[in-house]
Each structure stands twice: as C-alpha cells, then as structure tokens.
Length: 116
Image 1 (cartoon, rainbow, N blue to C red):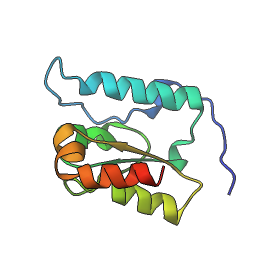
Image 2 (spheres, helix red, strand yellow):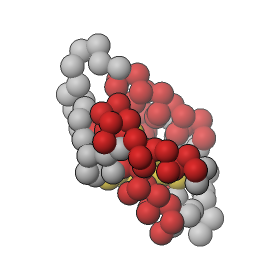
Image 3 (tube, helix red, strand yellow):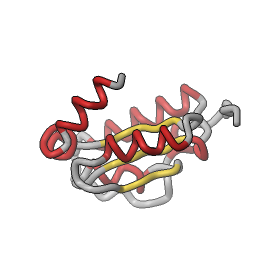
Image 4 (cartoon, rainbow, N blue to C red):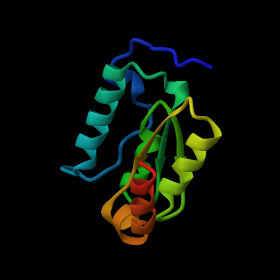
C-alpha cells in the first residue's frame, strides 16, 4: 500500500473535541506544531497514528483528526513500535510527558534509541 500525499491545512488535522488543557499549557504549542508538521508533510490522516500514554499530553490523540491510541503509563513507545512493525506503511508519532516517557518509560526510550 503506497502512502498517498494529501493537501490539508493544520486545522484539518484537528478533531472537533474541545481542548480542555489549562490556559498557558505548553501542550497547546505542541498540538499546533504537530498539526502544522502533518500538514507540511502532507500526511494522510488515515495512515497516521498518534500514540500517547497518560497525563495531559496523553489526551493529544483525542484532539487530532488522525488515528490515535491512548495507552498505558510509560508504554507508548513499545506500543508504537508494535504498530509500526504490524504496518510499516503507517506514520507513527508518540506524544508523552516527562513522567510518562522519561519516568516509568525511560527504559523503552533508551531501547527505542538502540533500534533507531
């Protein structure tokens, strides 16, 4: 299955779910940057998966109009690796906070680096 480039704006990658982060939260900037990057790369929303753990950053897939998975605390990276192994044609992105990826998930972070 070949990846199809599409022409969408960053808003096209946003879902209709109300973003309930606290005013001034840095996740707003991350969400904006991520949707901008998806638009610039021309990613197909049906071939893009956003994986997250728990916490405020874990809500990111809910606010995006792409495929998304809300996983266990600290296990976003191995879950994302499983998705990519199952379907290498997908674009897989992991979102997580410091407690999720660098606290309980630090072992997976180091392991993912070894696998590039």
